[in-house]
Image 1 (cartoon, rainbow, N blue to C red):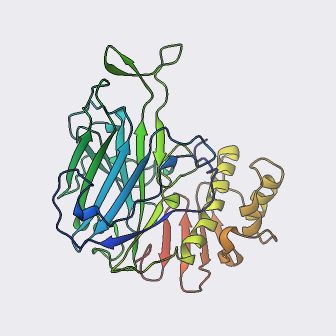
Image 2 (image 1 turned 135 degrees about the horizontal axis):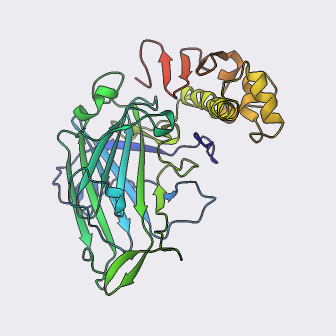
Length: 366
């Protein structure tokens, strides 16, 4: 299927990113004063969600910020510490790795990806839009000012060592990412980025004190495990609408996911159905009622979202009321969904290629 429907609902994790208050020295060590009072994220889970088996090894991350930088620390526990990629912008996930994804304006387009292995080899790239929406990576993009470090509790590529974990520190200057933020500046307290973290972990066997990727009976390498902070409900991290919310705070204040983001999800649920209809018929439906009838016939599951958008009585997820004023415009090969936000302050527009626009003078959360 070209665009899979997630098996999870809209329940992204929220992280309150506090201001850094202590001097920072980059060395890959998270057991130092800079990180001492900083909360971890929840433990990573399988990318499809908690309905899948729990990861074999624990993974967590921390974040801080100041006026110039976003600081990220990660702890990747486990005995299998290995890596072979040594060239920048090589395909790092061929090794076990740690990955960061950042969408500064919550429109699901123009976002950043970063990967690193236990050798501190990095791959940074820019995505014009998700692959499902016919987007592609710009591998020539570099995060200017990026700084990284790794510390290994054990020995790299040595199964006989007392291997316990590897830790990573990543410093990302806001100046390298805010070109894709609506305000074209570093974040301010109360604003948020959409963020996700991923850990790729391959199943391995040990042969003559070497890690070797496990294969099936036909000699094919088994698929990697994907453990993430914010599950996307499909084996595909490139679903930015389900990434976590990282709120930047000045002190100890807290924030909740804005209602407009829940409204976007109501539109997104219809987007999944519309694309499934297109794949089945070679065109988009003439009306949302047509989509709803097909869903009701069991071709696409329960069809709650389409029924809601078409004016039926089923409730929207998370109490969203944006569906009440939905507008659907289409040709055979494209569409536009739009509605007024539930707070009445914005017009939301979801395009066929997945981008979400906010018509209030800005796009996204700016």
